[in-house]
Amino acid sequence: MLYTLAIYIYMLGVMLAYPFNKKVRKMVKGQYRTYKTLRKKVDKQARYVWFHAASLGEFEQGRPLMERFRRLHPEFKILLTFFSPSGYEVRKNYEGADLICYLPFDTPGNVYAFFRLIRPEMAIFIKYEFWRHYMWACHHYHIPFYSVSSTFRPNKIFFRWYGKSYAHALKYVTHFFVQDEESRRLLGMLGYVDNVTIVGDTRFDRVIDIANQAKQLPLVERFCQGRANATNTPSTAPFVFVAGSSWPPDEDLIIPYFNNHPNMKLILAPHVIDEGHLRQIEQKLRRPSLRYTEATEENVAQADCLIVNCFGLLSSIYRYGQVAYVGGGFGVGIHNVAEAAVYGVPVLIGPNNKNFREAQDLLRLGGCFEITGQTLFNAVVDRLTVDNGLRATRGNVCRDYIASNAGASDVIFGKIEF
Figure (cartoon, rainbow, N blue to C red):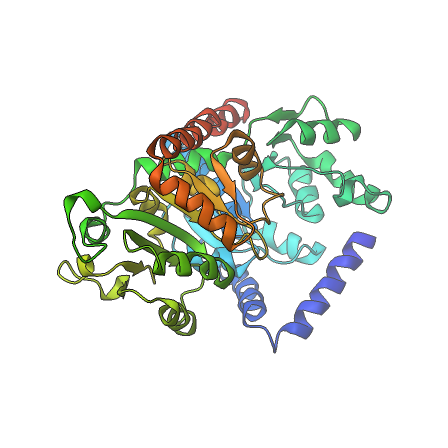
């Protein structure tokens, strides 16, 4: 009852924010459309597997499983649900799923309506998602419920005195596929031992798949071959620095260094690509720059900075750099380090990286460098620019780390019961 009350209080907060928040409006409208979508598109004769991701990051973790599922079990159709607009709005046309919609709030009425329209044969929830009423319904209808790439920490609600009743919902999980030993230990304290397996993070499988299927980008290749200084001699081949998912604090470190090092070429893929931010970047630059959407074979080689003002390219662009910088570490947290590390390049990150396992591992192993300010940034990039041996060694650490952590999808498929 307390859980249900909390959900209704949360819904009230969402409705109060509705007139003022664009993201909230998209979520509420999307949830309202869910029942119409299911009534219209569900094939009553088909067998469905249900994947749920809170947002885009969780989707990317679950994507290797979805794509392997479709390849190995074409007899099933895939239902994909999101909770956040940042996932749904980006992947609503994803071709790897047959049905894509928002997941309505976890109230008894919504859950009843949802399962009236579709009765999947299996539910796979990714990482942090534990909605009690949906989990109970899966148990009630004898639908196996799997938690994939999940992580548990002592500060989570399940392990606090006030979260004991919520922790009871975990008994509806058929099997936990967790990322690390700490998660298994904590679940063991709650009595879950036989249905817990450490598999690591499926994101490693995903970034390897991305690297193997990386797009050929002729404009980027031409940019990297073009001039980086006035002489343009073979002995001064440009050093290519790729900065992905950057925010203004990241750019305030990168751009001054770039402005003062004429042998460097910069590929900058900002996290926010609205016109205001793009102009802000261009005003800071003191060397020729070009937006990707305006690039041609003729003009791209003459630019020293290529600003990637579109989505979907960054994961392929990282491979063109000798050093990568992954943004977000001076704000809410770093973005996807593995996406760059898979190409065997050293990776620079900001200080807010403590909650990211792969970043912590690579910092310990030496593949990542933590940057805390301009002086340290300058020193690290100076060294990586001139020391080819160091750069190769640290890059190999990254590549080997990603390869050694792959295979979570294989383990999961070996334990899922069809």
